Length: 84
Image 1 (cartoon, helix red, strand yellow):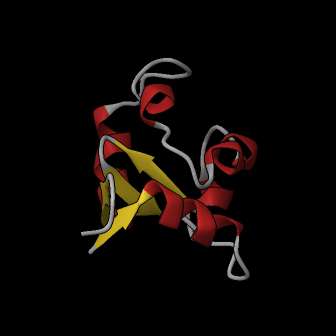
Image 2: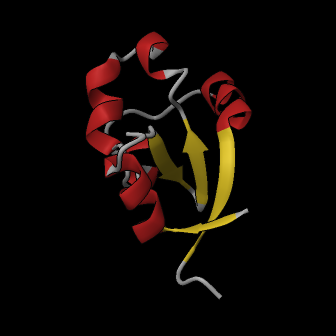
């Protein structure tokens, strides 16, 4: 599936209050992971509905290879500029 940043934001802020973040052009649905995040829920909730690429890749914390592998379990969609 494909999703724009606007669609991701709308779903994160909508009725379902989905937990969606984008990293490196991939949207991740992290509802089931938020509570077990080693850095706490607060940082993930801050990035909900947003592109967290810079934060994930070192601006806040440079995540390990194990963290990147774990993230793959939550892949949801490819982030695209506009809906075709």
